[in-house]
Length: 206
Image (tube, rainbow, N blue to C red; front, side, top):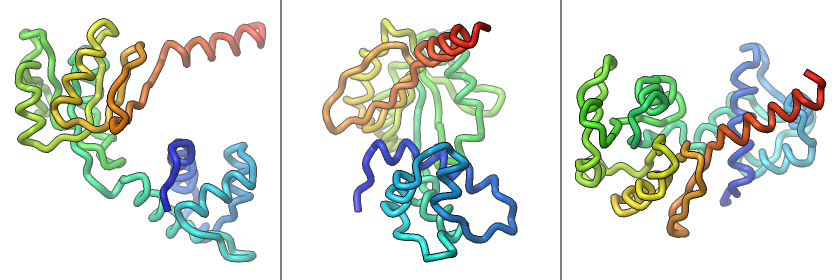
C-alpha cells in the first residue's frame, strides 16, 4: 500500500513519541497516541493502518512492532547518501551533525563556490568546489541533495542537482523552487516559521 505525503509528514512524530515511552510499555492504542500528540483518533488510526495494519482489540499495537514498521516506511533503516551545496554556517553545521545517521541520512560532503572554504572539516568531512558536483554525485550514486545557499542562487543549484541525478531535495533557501514532477522538494522556510511564532506572541500580548 502506498503512503501519501500528508501521512508521511506525521509519521516521524509518532516514531519520536513511541521511542520516548518507558521500556515496560509493550502495547499502545491509537487513542493514546492521538491524545498525546493532540490529533484525532480516526486520523491516527488511519495513518497507522497504512503502515502497520489494524491494532488488536483491547491491546492495540505492539510498541516494538510499530517502531519497526515506522522506521521501515520512513527509510530509517536504509542509508540515503546526501550532499550539501552551500558551506555557510547552516551548511557546515549540518555537515558536521552526526545525528542524521539515526534517521538513515549519511551526508557525504558539501560543495561551495568559495575557494577559501574548500578542504577538510574538523570531523573529517570534505568541502569540494562546486565544479566537482556532477562528477561526485555520479560516482557516489547520490540521490538526495541539501540546498543551504542564498535564495538568489538556489534555483540554479536545484537545476544542477536535477542534472546530476538527484531525485529528492531538502531546500533551506527562502525561495520556491521548481523541478520535474519526479523530483520531490521539501522546503524548510524558517522565515515563515518565525513569522508564525511572532504572530502567536503578539496575540498573547508578549
